[in-house]
Image 1: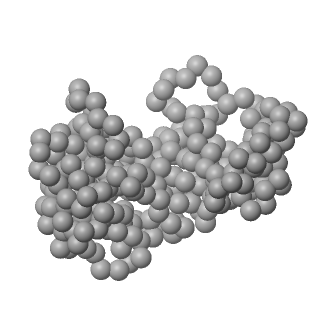
Image 2: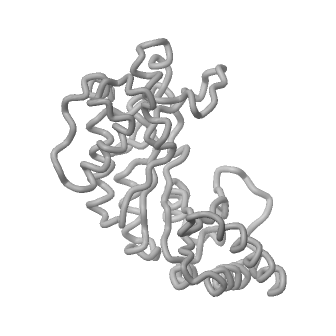
Length: 258
């Protein structure tokens, strides 16, 4: 990437965005995934080029906030393997990124050990991936703590072993609450778990929470939670705001976490 290419791309993107009410961009898939056995490493010019790209983007459009997606399980792994050259150099990134979105995609496998959700509060079944271990990794990470937001999935997850292929729009609490066979092999948080995730984000002083696939939580209010189509987001938000939890949503209260 050179200066001319960067400027051309920034101008083209700015022209495209000018027709929409877009306030920011999240740059994703820049994680070096330790679990993928990649045969390459970060290029030594990566940070110079990346800094140039972000700086050019914000110069052309000063109203655009640019953030970086960070994988939570990668953060735990690289905190325990600090000599690896493949983790983000936050000492460089903190000066140019306006925020970080820390996501928990594929944090653990969906199987019998994680029927209560793949992001548990404490370690489960020999897995080191939990909110507790993430908090420990975050404490010693040089990432700018005042720039982080936590992203949580607000829908169930299909069991890794299932052969049934379902589009994202079908893996919802609507389906779960209808009581069909899906709830037998999906991993799903209950109301307490969602509340705890919001509370956790507040306790580590995250700037906010991001809810992934918010429009597919319970689109037809089948969970019968005061007709709230975004009920699991509401549960997390209550936790983040330190207000009383939602306790009258029977179908989501009764999900077993064992």
